[in-house]
Structure formats: C-alpha cells, structure tokens
Length: 100
Image (cartoon, rainbow, N blue to C red; front, side, top):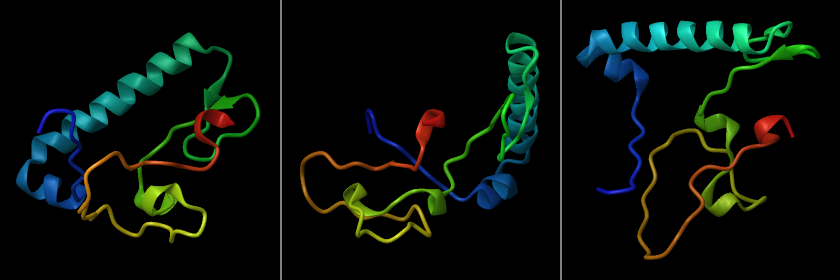
C-alpha cells in the first residue's frame, strides 16, 4: 500500500528476523553518537532528558491518544486499529511533541 504504515510487535520481529535487532541497535548507537557530536556540549538524556540534554523518543502506543486525537478518546494500549471509513484520520498524536 503506497503511503501506508505497518506497526508490529518488536518481540515478533526479533523472533523472525534476529538481524533486525542488531541493525536497530547499531542505528541507535550511531544516531546517539552523531547527536552527541553535533550538539556538543549537550549530553544524551535518554527517554527522560533534563535541561542541557537531548532526548530520545519512541512510538509506544501508551504515549499517544486514541481515535482521531479526541481528548475523550482512551489512551492506546495497542496499535491494532480498524479503519472502516474513507477519508483521513489522525493516526499519531502525542503530548509535547518536539519538546513543546
């Protein structure tokens, strides 16, 4: 599907494609090292950065709101979603994106 997204369980990917985990760990290391170099003197603050640190992010479903980004929508606990209508839908929306 052109322009589509596929979300799947990382545990299942690791079982079926063990090289994926190695490649992703290497990519993460390379990106963090590049950020340390490019943003010196900032340090890596991981998932909970403090002042003077840069952070990392994730697309864990529990960090996003549910259907259409409505404030009354439940927090997502899974990426399993069924779209049964034509048109556009917000599929990802988080709190304080981009350090806002």
